[in-house]
Amino acid sequence: MLIPFNKPYLTGNELKYIQEAVSLGKISGNGEFTRRCQEFFEQRYGFHKCLLTTSCTDALEMAAILLNIQPGDEVILPSYTFVSSANAFVLRGAKIIFIDSKPDHPNLDERQLEDLITPQTKAIVVVHYGGLACEMDTIMEIAQRHGISVVEDAAQAIDSAYKGKALGGIGHLGCFSFHETKNIQCGEGGMLVINDPDLVKRAEIIWEKGTDRAAFFRGEIDKYGWVDTGSSFLPSEVTAAFLWAQLENLEVIQQRRKQTWEDYFAWFQEKTPPSLLSVDYLDQFNKAAEGLPFAVVSEENKVNAHLFYLLFENLDYRTRFSQRLKENGILAVFHYQSLHQSSFAKSHFPEQSQRSLPNADRFTDCLIRLPLFYELPELSQSHFFR
Ligand SMILES: *Cc1c(COP(=O)(O)O)cnc(C)c1O
Image (cartoon, rainbow, N blue to C red; front, top):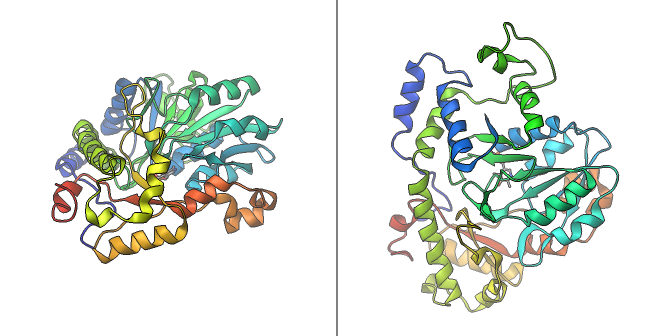
């Protein structure tokens, strides 16, 4: 493949900081680099409290424990998402209620939310697809009125904003991913953001295997012990040191990704894509692009250039397009398969799998993501980028 779909970017300082972490002599979790990374987010985005985790999946699992999700509770989340958004709550025995995407974007359709709420509903998981914000004002208002918690799956949403507020900092809890496919990465990594101050103390305990060790290390108590359920959710300092090298370069990385995103967008909006990307059945994108929500890029409603997708009229056109790119050495990939149609949903939530969620199914069949990574402009010069 001449142009992969993704190529993890290295800033050059990763090994230097890892070496530093090793020579500090404490490479288990919650050390100097963990503190630096967490403070970076708290200061830059105004997040109340951040805890690094080994993945976004782990952050979501922490969220489910922290919200006391029990068997019989219902959790509403989009069908068009990654399995972890659902699994974290399934592990605690929750029943998943799927919500459809918007007609013009994979984000959940907040207009359908209220009808899905029952007395059993404990949480709503919003997924900011491609770093574009869900309608948080509406969602938070509905959740508040019904006394339901909101978890933001902000795995793809680092450095995005909704009405001037950083994504991940609006719901009761926010979950980020630093998997190598995300804008900022450390191989495997994640973070839980605790926006509800009442949840901070217990979050730290769950993070530290059900003990009050974090408070002990701060000198608040003179011995630590088993006080709650928990698990081992913290990454080692080796991971945090790698992540720190990335965070130091966040501006540079974001700048580059945004330029690439804007180049793509301009081509398709002005109907002037390079010949390789130009096919007559692409018209649908331009139809979908009218009022396309993720064209709204401003400081207030910032989109982080996590991914760039095209939407085809049907599966056949999408297959032809990806085939055409593949023959030219370029890897473009589709994304999620509707969870309500999965074999797991069919066996565990059969009534959910029978519901009609046409928008989620349409994105399953018709959406394709183009390569988007730091080094793409250099790599693809002879193909389609300058
Ligand atoms: C990447 C991703 C995850 C999982 O992140 P990990 O860090 O790999 O666990 C969860 N949800 C969404 C929406 C994602 O894009």
